[in-house]
Amino acid sequence: MIEFVRNVRLWFAPAQVRKDGETPDYRFSLANERTFLAWLRTALALIGGGFAVDQFLPDLRWGWRVGLALALLAAGVLCSLRAVNHWVRCERAMRRGEDLPVSRFPAVLSLVIAIVALAHGRRGARGMGGVNAPAARRQDPDRDPGLQPERTRLAWRRTTLSATASAVLAVKTALHGGASAPGLVACALCCVLWLGFLSIAHHRIRALSATAAPAAFAPRHATAAVLCTLALAVCGAALVL
Image (cartoon, rainbow, N blue to C red; front, top):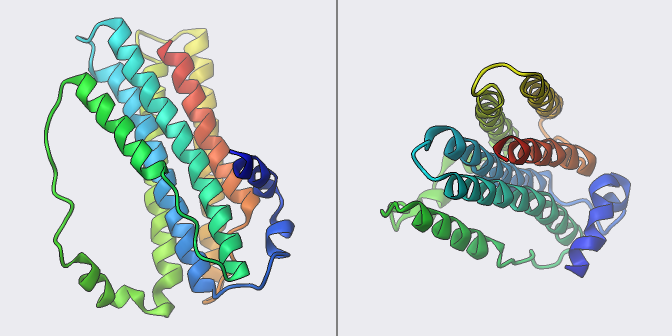
């Protein structure tokens, strides 16, 4: 927790991060950025799931429906905070030549999702892919250094689609039951947050397209993307309640 608090100031201070150690190979920074985007997509999916529970499970008792929706929204908030914190920690570790940080958060998140799923009464299992996945990755032609910026651009586009889906569900929740003044305000706010996220993504995609060896993602832009996600979750909690 103390380390998390110390890292918060770095979310808004790109110069401080870049003063640490030496600049790593840009391919490692892009891989770290894609991991950040994967966590952000997970956060957006959880937030979208919170909206979906409220909208598409009307037969659930109000208490259960609100509880499940808030649990998913809270998990999305934690996931988005973890995304930017882990990105900063990995970036600093690479610049210092240290081992990458490890975390119990994925296990905790899995337990939270499992508890929500059990509470909802649904059971099932899903395969995690073939056992030869590591070997397939080693042979993946996308590992070519020249394709790293393109893979990162695709990751941004996928994340933008996740943000769009969450925003659409937010608007549907805001307008559920007819247009009202609070609903229209919430709808407008969700649209502004979505446009803000699109602006950040567009800026980064242009930067990735400008050169074959792009600069590392700026902490302030990562923080801005996470703040848009957090604000969407807060709007969701207000709408659900």
